[in-house]
Length: 280
Image (tube, rainbow, N blue to C red; front, top):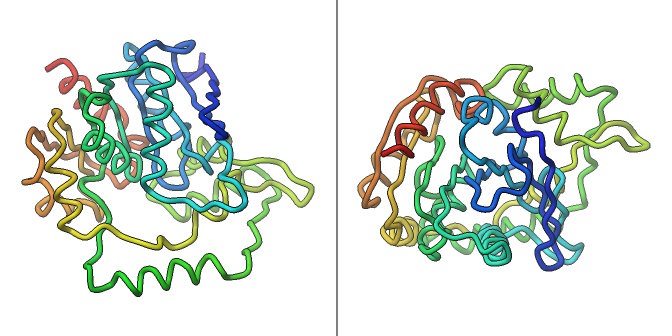
């Protein structure tokens, strides 16, 4: 049986959110949040190791099998936090354990800071803190973000086969074709022009704003729950540890081998750290 055999769908306002789970609609899941342009299948290798936990890998709007934002909308980081809050209230979930990778870890951190009643423990996989920029660059960031939106829509890539799509994905990442195939199987759709990615092309637009380092630190300071930071030793995110780590109140840091998608390439090692953290 697949490690995440149950495909779930949630109606959250006008938005449809998809998920994969190892339980049939778990009452209080361990919520897994993927990274930018990934999908729920990124947690399949980890789920093969964490069989005792009721995992639910949710897909953000615009990703995987979740719906896209409306044609007059855009993708804002904090809107993903609202999506999770709305879903938690709808399902009456509280005091969750959340496992987040990359962007998903940033969303989980912002959620724990602003809605502490929803989060009991945080696991942050190769991500600590937030993407930030100095206040002096605010005008430039706004201009660049709006300009990227106003450009003519780029044509999505098309592929002759699933293997071709997976190969293209693998070339952009730090994992093998095996992991790329997991993401491609979940993240592609057949069209008249060929196989293409399900993800909304608008996700590639530049952000119109960035948090300042001071705003990021204030959010992190508001996180009161225990936090496990799993940092890959061959990843650019390791450089952020020294800056953001002192602002967490209850942070346990561990290193694992591998790159940014270490939960896919080194799932046994990552799972062992998670199990110890949850048991404690």
